[in-house]
Length: 134
Image (cartoon, rainbow, N blue to C red):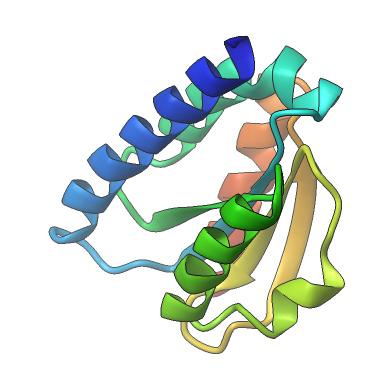
């Protein structure tokens, strides 16, 4: 039940992020590989969301949830990944509890960070990804 709560919270956060995106240019695509059965996701998801918010005050990071919980959620996530042009490249990145960072324009892989890392480490990874695009 807590995993569903985390997913709902993350989804709401992503919707807020999308509204901010209309006001700025996206530099980084951050794909959050999540699964309800993932212990790392369950223990760190809500805390990591705070780091996501703090690192994205300018709205230049677009977060996409890749829900690997079951076949249905994988199919829904596949469409979201296709919409941002990362469906093929994400077949190489299957780890749950990990955020994969890509250049939004050319879709090249920049870095990855586990949600189990401290908020400071997550923020550093996200800001570093943005700085590589500048």
